[in-house]
Amino acid sequence: MYLPSGHFVAAGLTDKVRIYTIMATTIHELRDFHVRGCRVVSFSNGGHYLAAGSEKKVLVFSAMTFDPTHNFLGHKNTVNSHISVF
Image 1 (cartoon, rainbow, N blue to C red):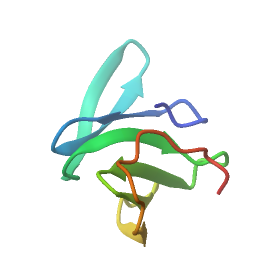
Image 2: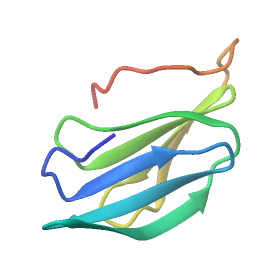
Image 3: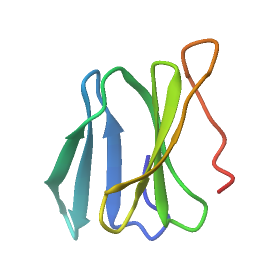
Image 4: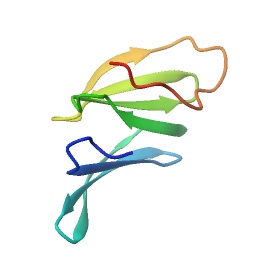
């Protein structure tokens, strides 16, 4: 999923979320962090947050610092998709 401003791309992998930065014609790995079982990632509409669906929870991170901000726990089934409304 890409950040609306167009400078970052987030990729959900089986054991992590990896953030890439886009510069003109190149893509560079910026950071990755452990998110076990990540199945879906998306940036918020305004680009301030990044959400990652991991197993039966949704983890929310700041899109500026990539520090965790919220954990939404208690889903009955594996999180396979979510709608970016925050």
